Length: 252
Image 1 (cartoon, rainbow, N blue to C red):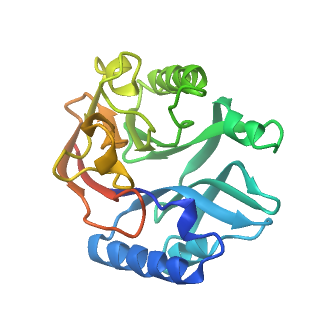
Image 2 (tube, helix red, strand yellow):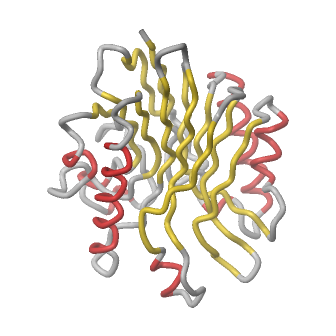
């Protein structure tokens, strides 16, 4: 089973169609080359209640099961959110609240919740996969307390899925070395992969900041002999401020 996670960046989709066309072309090339079974994207922008151009593209490539989870407004008629798209038909989709979107509130858009997508599906008569597409609020001094609340709540949600096999991916908006990071809170029951200093997952302004902040995007999976990651790649792309992650899992 192959899964693609990517934060495609709001800047690519707002009032700049040349960027949007470049993003769509890159996403199509990545999907055609790697043929993921499931796709999880962050920062997908919708205008009004209509499906985004990105969702339409993904659907046209054969991913008929698409769910958009709104995180909050970024303009008077636009919202940002995450999507899960799959060629698997028996997905059970849930939107789970992990905290408050205080960024939207601080920007004058009122009260909104930060949510994650949980997509569950059977892989055989005995095993279920719980796939989480996540994007906690960004980590900076004014949002640090809320960020760590969301990370703690996310850890609790994933802990509740320990009777299944879990895969958790997306832009975690935090380096792995923080004492309260998701990586540290879950190291007893989850494995993880991310980028490196030489090939980081986050590239926008990264050179100006500490190398500790280079790798905000990660993929976690259950520590179990029943599931192993057999291949992982940080795809070399400069269309977004984040690079895509592609992982192949073997279910035993």
